[in-house]
Image (cartoon, rainbow, N blue to C red; front, side, top):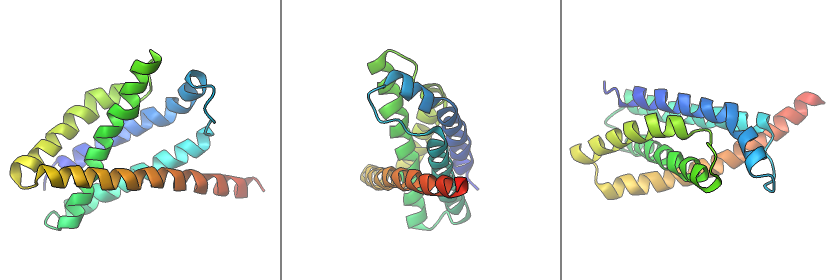
Length: 161
């Protein structure tokens, strides 16, 4: 079995933990004009995205020959790579303030995910397949974040009643 799904899960776990702990407070302080997301809603969404990442990596590890599972995994790897740069790195530069997620993004996500994507391109996938997989999974994840925040609002509101 390839170690790539395990490396991916390790990287996104630490990255998403860093985000969940500090990003909502940083955004509220650094971007006061932006409509704030409640920390509980954000954490719920981060947990959901992490679970989806684990699912993509785990299914790919169990069924490495299944082409659609591989595209989903590679797309997730690419989407998390893009996420490390946009918004985290660019926000740090733009606001001249450390944006939570930059450390794990630069030290884990960018180097490890570039290796995973490079291995895929060198062994059997076309760069165009990697780019399309990244775009499709990235778009799905952006939608999933919105859905997960909506679900969090509903679940947490129901729990308070």
